[in-house]
Image (cartoon, rainbow, N blue to C red; front, side, top):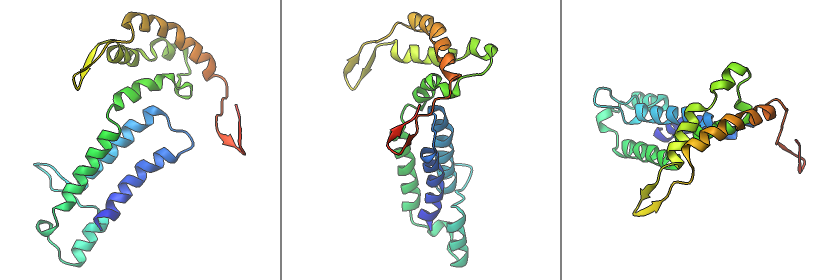
Length: 178
């Protein structure tokens, strides 16, 4: 019964990836929703008991099962599932920042274009413009933050021109249409 409720939560996340068009920025809120839902349903918090999902709750009611007698694997499995999702998408802020290059998400007005992508470019500049040490390995910066911002202020107008075209990169009958 637990797995049926958990599967319902995960199915909604999976459906996002099965849609015809998935923008990088669409992943973050759905991932957060799935993690919060799993946590609320099967883990709870210091102040709130888990809700256990509809199917499991109905099963518990029909069989007079008390929450305290539920197996510990429910909480353990839910925590492992959340950890796996977080490991699979460790840098969702990076994915979200990269979404500025998606022409389907490009703003439609000049006013919006003026400030479009500023926060994301700043994030990308900090992410790729600073040296890092990971597991005793040194990764030197690969971009100049100031030049990135300068180039972005030009590149966004190239992207804008492409956003006005109707590109469709969906495969039909082994032919790619553009």
